[in-house]
Length: 344
Image 1 (cartoon, rainbow, N blue to C red):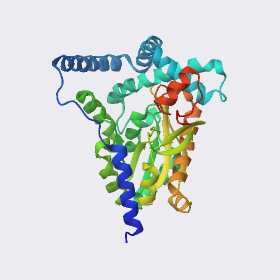
Image 2 (tube, rainbow, N blue to C red):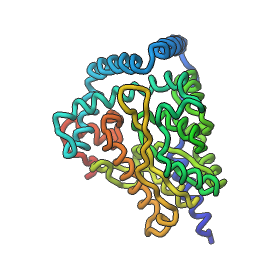
Image 3 (cartoon, one colour):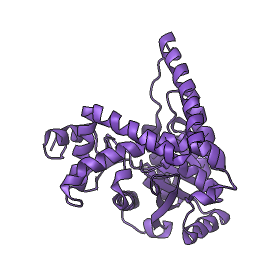
C-alpha cells in the first residue's frame, strides 16, 4: 500500500508537471527576426546608457510619457485593462478613476524595464539601502531566523509593481531563495535581466526546471520565491478581487508536502523616482495550515487574500491588462457580460 508521504509526492509531481511544462519553441529563427532582435538589443543598450546619464527622475518621466502614448494607441488592450479594473475595483474606488488607474498600470509595467536599466548601475550591496526596498525589521528578522534553523519557506508575490527587483532586495537583505522566472524570448535580454535579478545571490530558476528544483531546495530547508497570481485553466475554484477564477494548487501542495511556512509580500514604487517599499501582508505558519481539513485549499485562498491586500494598497501598480481571470472572462467583461465561465 502506498504510504501518505508517497501519495503526497505523486500528487505534487502531477501538479508541478502540469504547471511547469515548457512551451514549444520553433526550431529556427528567421534572419529577419534575428536582425530585429539584434537591433532591439543595441537600442536597449543605448537607452540604458542614456537613462543612466539622465538619472531616475528624467528616466521615469520620459518612459512614462512614451508608455501613455503607446497605451492610448492599443485600443483592445486598453479596453481589457479598463474592463478588468472596473470589475475588480468598481465598488472600491470611484468609477471615474478607473481609466486613470488602468493607464497608470500600463505605465508601471513599462517602468519595469526602466527599473532594470537603472538598477544595473545603482543597486549594489553597499547602495541598495538608500533606495528603500528593505523588508520591515520584524519580518526580515523572522525570515533570517527561519533560514538559520532551515525551516522550508515559500515567498509569494504577484505581477505587481517592480516585481523584477524583488530577488535583488531579498538577496541584499540576506535572504537567499530560489526564484522561479519565465525566460524571455529574446535570449540577450533574458541574460541581461537574469544577471541583474540574481545580483543579490538568489538562484534564478527557469520555469521548465522548477518542478524538480523547488522540491530540492525546500527539502534541504531552503526558501523559494514564486509569482503566484497566475490563472490556471484547470485548478482550484477561487475568487480573486471578487471575481471567479481558478488558481494553481502548486503552492499549497509544495507547502503541504515540505511543511513549509509561507510569506506573502510585494514591492511597490514610491513616487516617480527610484525608490521602493516592500510590504508583507501575511505569514502562514505550517503548523496552522496542516491542521486544516483541506490544507491546499486553505493555503491557496489565504495567500490570495494577502495578494489582494497588496494590490488594493495601490491598484495603479497591478497589471490590469493581464488576463488574470482567464481570457474567457476578460472577453465577457469587455463586452459587459457577467464575469462567469461559459459553462455556468
